[in-house]
Length: 194
Image 1 (tube, rainbow, N blue to C red):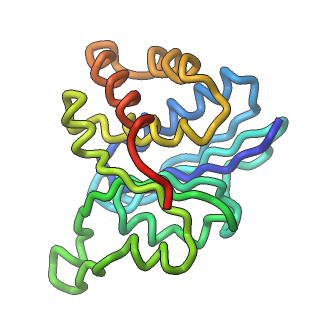
Image 2 (cartoon, helix red, strand yellow):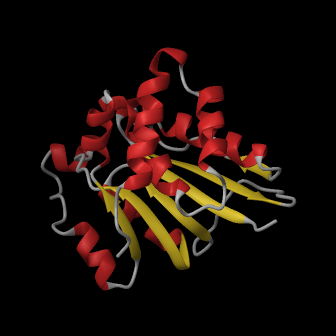
């Protein structure tokens, strides 16, 4: 089995835990050995959050070192820039193009950098940027940005859409099932890699 290293990065409260749970479930369903890290960061206070998901025939550690991530799924574009050094050569960043100001920007200590994604592209980083928030709203809830991004990530795997849907049915809250399925489908159809 092909091994994969995937990082999920964002800001606390965006649903990265559910995203990592969904990703882990679909990979286990495909027969992979999977390790998922605990979430790091101040997730309860809007701080940066990162989750590592590693899979393969046999995986011993959930930690992904710099230069080892096949994919980085970023819930916010500045978080993509923060963790780009973990991306391996030829890897892809799947990112929401949303801007969420971190505390230093809110307090005026720093300015949010202009053209964050463009500067990464100029360095040769492969970026698949989508407006995940708009797609989540189209699906029925701003809270399903995470599922939109998992839908977009799914196009890079050999795992069937049906397997992803089964995993959604197993991990997503039942009362939001149809919204999550729609969000996943919208994410699969969105975006163009640059």
